[in-house]
Amino acid sequence: METLIATAARALASGDPLAALNGIALRDDPPALALRGIAMAQIGDLGRARALLKRAARGFGTKDAVARARCTVAEAEIALVSRELGPQVGRLAAARATLEDNGDHSNARHARYVELRWLILVGRLDEAEAMLAALEPAPSEPRCKVAHELAAAGIAIRRLRAWAARAAIERAGQAARASRIVPLIAEVEGVSLALDQPAARLVAGGEERPLLLEEVETLLASEALVIDGCRSVVRHRGAVISLARRPVLFQLASTLGQAWPADAPREVLVARAFRGKRADPSHRARLRVEIGRLRKALHGLAEVSATKRGFVLAPGCGEVLVLAPPVEDDNAALLALLADGEAWSSSALAMALDASPRTVQRALEGFAARGKVQSIGRGRARRWVAAPIPGFTTTLLLPGAFPGE
Image (cartoon, rainbow, N blue to C red; front, top):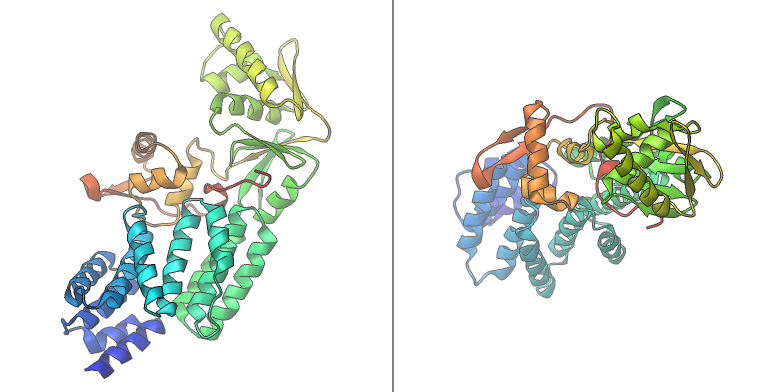
């Protein structure tokens, strides 16, 4: 019987869940239940996988702490894929500590990579980089090598380091091909393809064109004053001014940047920043106040001067370029998260975006009314999904530290 368990475990490690199920599908002992749960997770039946792993953990009881910890790590990985980010984090850390204390270093490393993926997903890049630097994948474990390099690529993408990301993906591809594990190879190829899609739009001179991540990196290193709609920041020569929590000021800056070197009419500024149809006296008064605040915010990077018909942006040197998300929407970051094809809870989306749950819920309801997203389930089990948006990579829009911050 133990031979069947060992054979099923080897089949799972090689990425063949059906072969594993052939030997253990009818067994109900805890080791078989755990392996069946992992196999169902690999197939994609996450609900049944979670139930099987819970049964296995109960079956192991308190006497086999290592086996229970392994089940907890597997459940945490399923929760990560299911975008249930909060509840499992504390249990995962405890399970990892149990595995390390009992000498199961291979599964402890795997637990760290699960935790690392979670940190990257929610944008805690400083913590993720520190954890990645402390990890050393074992040469005999191709899965850990692939996970290590994909984590490095994920951090590099969110840091807008395109060449470092491509180098990490190439190393991950070599490790995946050496392992001959088809799911690993497919995962790396999917990440590689995403880098070949437009990551943003450049708006300048009344025209716009898509940019790859390498082009975005080059643009941000230039002498231009960059108004970045993907991160709601204004950047010049390494100086970064965040307007993420001042949407009116950012909308004014973006409108002035799109009009540069010409001025932007007051009517256009009012329409973009205040959603007003016409610039009445109250709007003009408010516009003057907000322009004054924008001048103060951009002090040292650019000047905002009044003209006969509106206002004009005058950078200290160089040109003005505006980066916009690949899709035109006020909640493009939310769409970017949903574009990974996974089913997200609204609370997980709020955590990943560092936004209030009610704000995210309103945005989801608006997208649902327009047919861009759909919900599955009800109450606390409700999840939101969207078909991947073709033609752009999502990771540029995910939260994370901006170069220079």
